[in-house]
Image 1 (tube, rainbow, N blue to C red):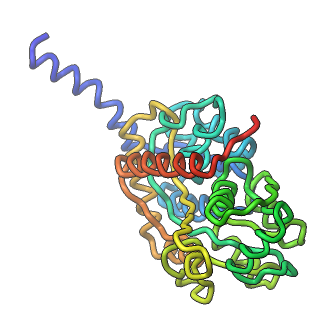
Image 2: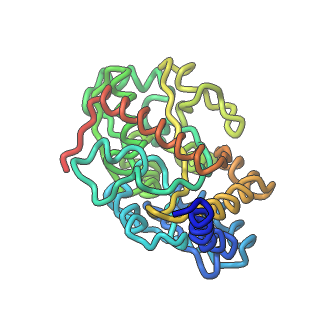
Length: 321
């Protein structure tokens, strides 16, 4: 094939992809959140997609498909048509953690097409009202004196809340009882109801309950105090130096989604994250808007996969299933 013919062939092949990106979307877009409604993953997806819907002039529908630590929803998107009309908005679990924990998955997280990181949110150690410890230092002392008696809720086996608590136990030499739930909302509900002792989850979700007087916050797991909750000490200054844990939320598409479509979705998501309205809503919830290109998102998820793998290995976290 001559250079001229080869160029013409490549140009012809690229035109449908370019056209797809320019015309996208021509119908409603479905965004799957692999956890129940009411939690951080759900709230953040709805804030961002509402703005994307307005910009596109097309409906963007958020669907909650929970189960198996986020694997159920992730599998739905993995098997969807790679046309950009079905997306996954997810915290770290299905994208950078679960394949390090489960013996087998029905999807390969490395094959998702990265769109962008929506935001970062520090985790916070929260406790039920009536729980004797009122600080991280007191929690460590109490848990050491009562091995196996302190219960901690999680969003599910292998979730960031589970791994964060396992990291806490490993770093502080504690033995605690794990109580897994199907998502953040039911875990926080039982924490507020006094049925579990502590929970390590996203700051903004816990902050709502704390402000309502339903739970108490012991320490935020970031390097510096969060401007949304400046009175809450960091875990490091409150008794456990070096304890850092944060959640992030990313948007990805099914494997083999055309690059032009992925770029079109990225442009809309990044524009939404830069809007004053969306930024204000996310920051008010303690979540820092991120954005970034498809390539930057791919690099970020890859690095996070390495980081959580180390946490899993060091804390010796295993799952029965």
